Image 1 (cartoon, helix red, strand yellow):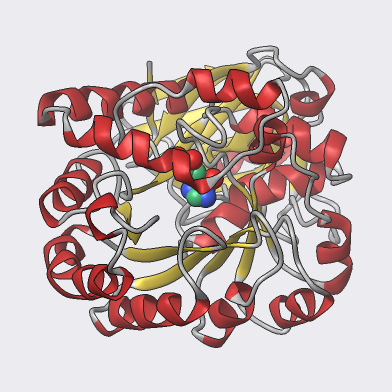
Image 2: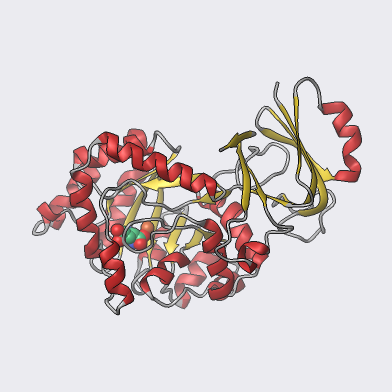
Length: 401
Ligand code: NIG
Ligand code: FE
């Protein structure tokens, strides 16, 4: 049995409404002057330090690792529910051109496809492992990875299989754009995605996604693809409303998708549909930062009662950050989210978007995925943008270094 006792926590964010020692109406369930007990990778007790003594006597036995947080904050590890980190190649020149005024277009995806097809398994594996370390160093303890830069059976299978080595949350995105070989045969490509490609990728994947947008896939194509995935047991998610308003959001709600991602352009009907559903809206403000598009209207979504997640969308084209603290800073500065709302969306919201109950919170029963901040509260993530405030990180009670 391995036991971890963290004490001297200035502020412990549990994300448990009604947590002992937190304000009863605080969605973050934030406990000042707190302590936390972890046994075999799971949180078994969280509460005010003043109440810890009997728990310590009861629960702490054998080999106990003690950590003094020194008055700093502990938050749940970030849950990044949207990344495209399985790729090869470099598109920094595209970024330079965009900053000089060029518009972002889905077509750039094909240049990453060419580079990814040409990379070896070892190169792709090394890239994924590098991102895994980069994410952990910035406090991300759960992350999703999409395929989508292979676009043929062999390469999509390879990306799903290699992604599965670093995460349980693999998303099959064969429907990222139509593969170049099928430029004149869209239907043939959708047949490939819903047939042999799905057969090859489903065993490695938990989710299926479609880029439903002008220049990528239509809503009818998206329906075919997502329902094919669902019939194979994959959960649906969708890229929609990134470049303009479309019907993707309503399709996702109709199909009971876990999440609609981007949501930069949404109609009132889209917001209403999301509000009446269990579908999370995942905002990716790093994309707006990196493409100079307008930011999504988070306040309208929150006012309507939509559940929001924040994610990085880390990819070589539209947004090449893996930093959830940066995403939180953008959400606060540019989306008008409060620091509390942004932290919740980057942790519990991401967990909801992945249908995960074991992460994104630090209440009893949760995985002990902890981030010790070099700050007295999570507010500092937005208040001190760009400053590396992630001091120590544990996943399932084991420190990542
Ligand atoms: O989420 N929108 C589609 N896919 C990515 C961008 C991919 C790329 O440009 O390489 C996104 O923004
Ligand atoms: Fe994306």
